Amino acid sequence: MEDDDDGVWGAVPEGAFQRIVVVSPHFDDAALGAAHLLSSYPGMTVITVCGGPPDSYPEEPTDWDALGGFVAGDDVVAIRREEDRAAMALVDATPIWLDFVDWQYQRKDERAAPEDVAKELEGALTTVAPTAVFLPMGVANPDHVLTHDAGRLVLDRHPEIVWFAYEDHGYKHIPGLLAWRISKLFHSGLWPTPANVPVQPDPDRKRRLISCYRSQLAPLERDHGLGARLDGNVPEQHWRLAPPPAGWERLMEA
Image 1 (cartoon, rainbow, N blue to C red):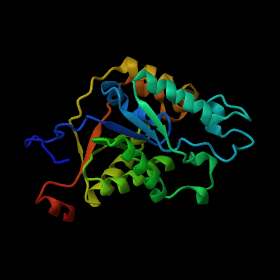
Image 2: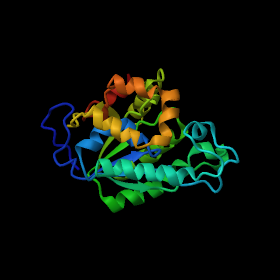
Image 3: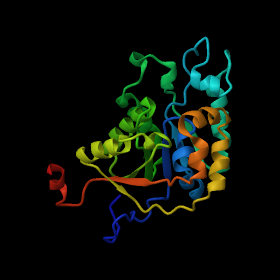
Image 4: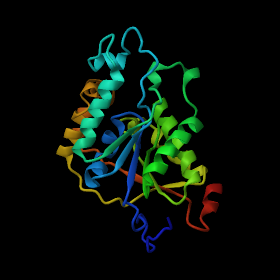
């Protein structure tokens, strides 16, 4: 899709938001990082990358799962899929779950490579034919990094789509990590730039949306200060992922 911003910095091409896809590393991440976007554009699609069950769960639940109320023998992914289904119904979005497995259930040598994820993600995107895709910035959590890296591969193959990144809830506050991602994107030839994405912020609806993920609330409170961030109405920033304006490439050499 060609840029049509009439020379206004931060503007988005006309028609970009006809069919929106948000790519989420885990079931709750789109709601945490892009709730106002989800609420403002009914009918979008949310693709969760790590939406598949492991071959077997640990004999004892992981620390994260245990804090969420799970016990040995629970089918954690099945329950979280139902939570996701309820959340997506609240904002009239369609969930798509890829079968990659949450890193907490795998050894490092078992984890998928970005190209493996990119292949499945590209297939899902082809089915939807989006005009805009929102990826996570992809920091700190291995699944967030994997999802971002896979999306970055698909981005290179589909310049007809308008691409954005949303900031990972919680993780973006870890000192230096958001700046690290922006720097990596900048030096890869994509310039992440805050975009003017029209949304209608609704903090109460965001709370209702996140509360659908009941099994995630306690660990999110412990590790990410969920309540304090919601009380503070931390802004949701969307970054346009596009090459630099013509002639500006030399700034990368500075």
